[in-house]
Amino acid sequence: MLQVSNLAVDHGKLRAVWDVSFRVEKGERVGLLGANGAGKSTTLGAVLGIYPPASGMVRFENQTITGRSTAGNVAAGMALVPEGRRLFPDMSVYENIKMGAYPSGARAGLKAQLERVYALFPILAERRNQAAGTLSGGEQQMAAIGRALMSNPVLLLMDEPFLGMAPIVVEQVMTALEQIAASAVTIVLVEQNIHRALEFVQRAYVIENGRTVLEGGRQALIEDTGFSSKFLGLQ
Image (cartoon, rainbow, N blue to C red; front, side, top):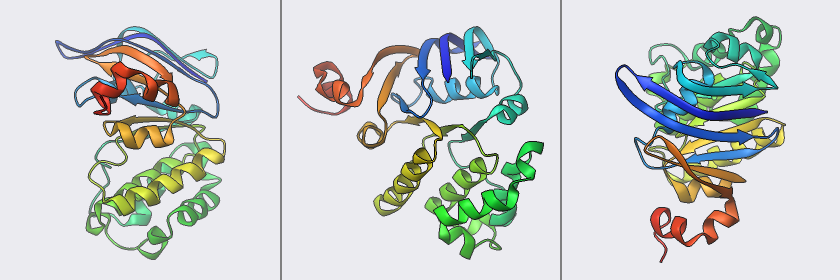
């Protein structure tokens, strides 16, 4: 479904990503793991079209999309849950979620998608008329996920979805992600919390200093002594 090859991305005169490669098959749950500043978020931004690649190739659904606009990629079936949620705090929960249905193809199914979001996160239905900025951090994350689902994506890109959330809320969001994945949505998860990420993903790629340095299935990574000692704190 998604193939990223030798991706390099610049932020002005600074190179943020040097050489990242990974692939994602339809229906998979794949992690991009690594420390803060490794280039994970920039990689997602380049895939979605937010940042133009300096070099490399991105293919989605058997088409080369390198440099294609964000709007074009969303219309084609991608959606991003950004780090920090990025909601409009003075707008209602409903208004924030509804904004995810801006592609013309998604508007016809707005009601059905909204019901899907409320079924996943009933608290959002209860607080639909409340200003998004008054929600807890976990509830705001739910709203951000709901907004992304409104475009009916086949590929969901998630950037640090568990950041700053209480453990009980993390479990609620994890359960929702399991349900989303079971509905034939492919998920790419960027996460600093390696332990938490490995509870969800099937395969993962490790990014260090803007480069892909390791890849493998969940169990293979756990059993890799270099990976486990460096990222899991195991000796």
